[in-house]
Image (tube, rainbow, N blue to C red):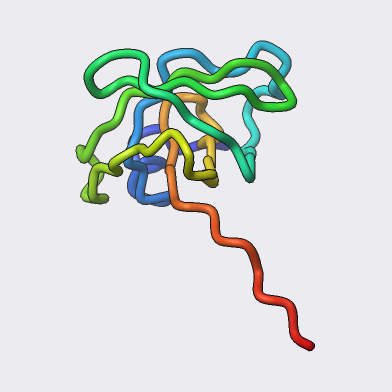
Length: 98
């Protein structure tokens, strides 16, 4: 069961989901990485996932710092299980040991 009141705090959300991907399974946390995001309008970004387009509104209502989106940077996007919250982080490639 998803506690909708606490979910944004659980994942330290820094975005509100405006449009969840159409083929995304409901009631599951979903991690997309790497994903390119582009600015739609002030405070709103969009990106393509394997499940379809996602639209997010940048926010700091759950205490997380509001991200600054750069078009040439890949991101990690965690969609909350309720489908209302998301966390955006910079995607960093893992270092390979040689």
